[in-house]
Image (cartoon, rainbow, N blue to C red; front, side, top):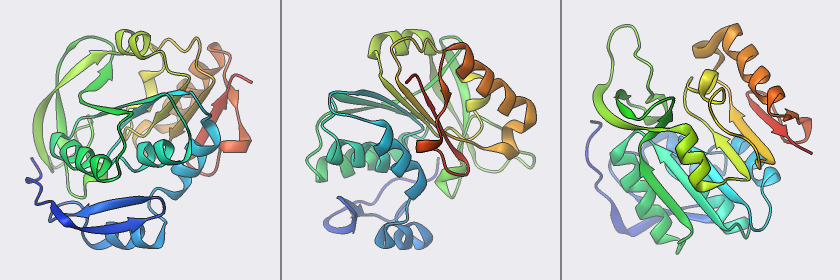
Length: 229
């Protein structure tokens, strides 16, 4: 893995509406600078806030530090947020951050969603944003095993009205199997270098088949939004 967390409960970094406990693993260098300037996940957060309303149920895939989930919880009176990530130590940090901010309506799960229930390789990398299910040439990072939960089972259980997805290339085919009935908005951070032209085409096709159209109001660059309205 990428090392345990050395979380300092007495020191925090303020970033917009959130406080982030200092630690020796994740809040270093560039990440600290982006948090302090308010630029951390700026585009994805802006899209997520535009997409969510009071009483929404949000499925947050690739929740990372918990920044987007935390911002939604602080700025929108949502019913619940369900976050998934394959990096266990990162989730430990995210849980500490949410607790520091008194956020109680976010449930984090160490797992990924996919076609079938199984155990799959997950590659933990530094910086942590590069961690994913995708092996890279050269074998960088540390391979761990992570539970894969059937995407249909998880989605039907959570009944999300909004889906936010930043899963480093896994977006290419995940939505082929995700039941999107009842989902009003989907926000996806694209990773074109991983999914290529065919993956982009497949993603837009899956959205179209679910009657979700490209929404320019919440889209910017690699952040694309889809709406049922």
